[in-house]
Amino acid sequence: MPSVKRTDIPTAQDIISLMPSPSKGDLAFLTKAYGFAKKAHEGHTRFSGEPYFLHLAETAKMLASLGMGSRTIAAGLLHDAVEDTEVKRDAIEKEFGNEVLCLVEGVTKLGALKYRGLSRHTESLRKLFVATSQDIRVLIIKLADRIHNMRTLEYVPKTKQKRIALETLEIYAPVADRLGMGQFKRELEDLAFPYVYPKEYKETTELLKQKNKETEEHLEKIQNSLRKELAKQGITNFTTEKRIKGLYSIYQKLKRKGGDITKIHDISAIRVIVPTVNDCYKVLGVIHGNWRPLPGEVKDYIAFHKPNGYRSLHTKIFTGDGSIVEVQIRTREMHNEAQFGIAAHLSYKSGLTSRLLNPNLVWIASLLPKRIFPGKQSTKADALSRSELSIPQWIKQIAEAQADVKKSDEFLEDLRTDFFSHRVFVFTPQGDVVDLPLNSSPIDFAYAIHSDIGDHMSGAKVNGRMVSLETKLQNGDYVEILTKKSGKPTIKWLDLAKTTFAKKRIRAAVQKTRNA
Ligand code: MN
Image (cartoon, rainbow, N blue to C red; front, side, top):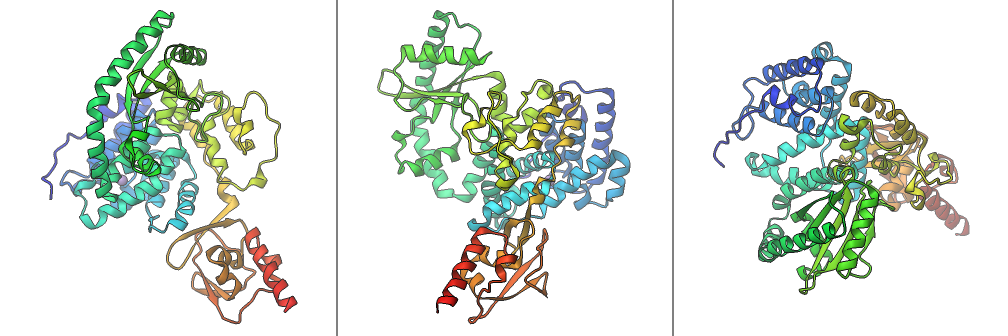
């Protein structure tokens, strides 16, 4: 066991001082939540031997530094109170209001979902994760909670470490990525990496150690000549920084490049941050005027942002001494978004100035069935015309409502979505999640599991009881399919099936019987 750790617990003042402009009301509200949570967890300790309350104060601190509002921060302080202590939900509602209670309960519900490591169902679990949270703030609290748990994973019993770390890699990091929260994603991945792939972690660290010695100095040199060149061209309002790619992300790329580290050119990069989009292109011009770019490696993510909303210009240049360096050019706003993603939009800091359309929310659309997006003429205002997705009305409404929102908490409330009501999430007897369109029947479920199971289905049990095949599955149902060798689809099943896949298989099977 590692020795007992002693970290100072952040005070209420530490947390509040991270808020951009806390009101007197915020101060009173958070001081009360702080005291309440501290008392509720009195006597509880973490695996590290530290007071349990440390975990809550650290979670709240992270939320405050993301610019979240006081209700979200309070929920961060209280997120384990209902589950782990004597505190009743009524008490939270009475003291802190219904909204905080909803957030706390949302986080508690998410805690009940466990990743079981079956990759076939991973995507469904990610969706369920998002659907269950209903409110984007619940996800953000849960991510902050997980980051602190990962930072202290070394104290957790060995038998649990790997499951938690794997769940972090498979569920939490991808969710953070889709929310555009690059900094969270990277930290989650790098904390989980050594527990999930210890051997690969060591190898990657070794490889990088050798390479880092050279790159550090080299990068400094390039950065200096870049700064000089920009100044010469009259560009003076800019900052630069060096960035080293996350370890897990390097490992992933190594796998794609057959383990050859010399083929990875973006391990280290130089970032140039400028005030306007115009400046970004100017800087790119200066760079390409002085260093030869690698053909095919110039990426304009400003005109065509990544699906999670990431924007930046990327280029790779020959530095003249045989090496290649990546340069990323972006505005301050893009930089904040790249690190904090959706949180940057939700925080009060930028809540008033955000653009009409929030590209970070568009990924949610990919979780919804296509038919609910009526095709839409593309306009200049949405650079999404190239993507497959058209913009669902609700995202536009949220974006428009954002313009006259005063506080992030009010805005966030509007994000509570019922859009996932277009999908149902049901479980196999083993507890794996399967997602299906609304009004799906056991027939759809059977075919989603395996076409053979569908083809030989003789009956179905939902939550342990026999049901008719006409039954419409509900969120959270446990479904078990009974099969018989002689079982086969009938033409009537076509009316009961919702999914295209099931219908196709049924048609084929019925055809075969007719021809026989
Ligand atoms: Mn927690």
